[in-house]
Length: 120
View 1 (tube, rainbow, N blue to C red):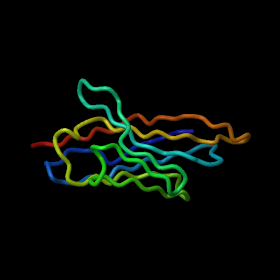
View 2 (cartoon, rainbow, N blue to C red):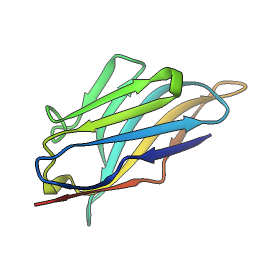
View 3 (cartoon, one colour):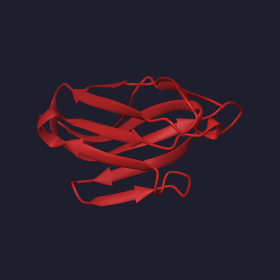
View 4 (cartoon, rainbow, N blue to C red):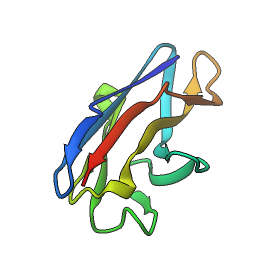
């Protein structure tokens, strides 16, 4: 199973970006998909998580500005980020718990990360 992020880049404060993360491989199902981030000199932190299609969690910093969604047919999760601020600058990582074929064993996977830089 591979998990690959895309959509990072440089944006001015107040702008928006949309991150995508696609999982591929021997996938039976993906119960949980999430976005984490790690800013310069900081620990990795949870930004948003979606379980199945309707259990959603946002960190305090993401609440009201970011929106997580998923397309189960494409095994893809998105993170729409609006009203970006310089403190959102970080490497954003996709995380997935995948039920791997053929037995459906739940297994954690991480993407390689995508850089988001917000200029002031």
